[in-house]
Length: 229
Image 1: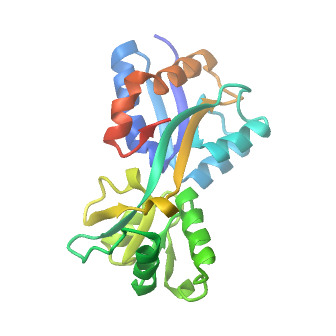
Image 2 (image 1 turned 90 degrees about the vertical axis):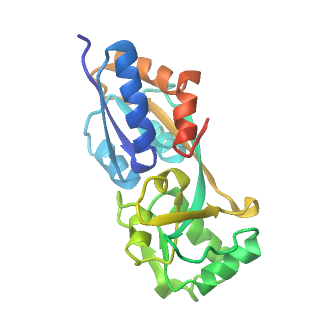
């Protein structure tokens, strides 16, 4: 039997990768073990020299790892696009997210605002700065620790509004998805995959990347709130 393919990914792609790797195992007999953690932690672990065969992260982070020599040159490939959404506690009144002005009003009215350490969190902080309200709401901001879903903060009542990738809200109990960000301020994150420079199973990793970026992988991506890249 071929050697196992190992990998690390950010939490945003965890559910998609679980389904796809199971389907890949059934199709090829190849076993895959991908650990999903906070994207910040995943990047730190790769930089610290921890060896994996495949890496799946936001493209900006993966591009930087490639530039630093932690990724096989030319192996980086687009995996999926993920839009940012807003979540509320189950049963709570839904905010108006129809346009930028209504979103800003909802943020100003919220008693607490949850955001992540990932790309969606960076986008939210930039929005607050662009709107000129970052100091107004500063004490109401609740940052989720790396690897902790913002949805769990919302479910526990620690955040009235939660901002994160749509895919990370889909299966969190106790919350409802109020909707995506309005189109004029939407932020779509491209997630990418690539072969680790220290890959012990480079051939297996390259075959898996081919599968993860194939048409066979498109339906699961959509089921879990993302779009094929």
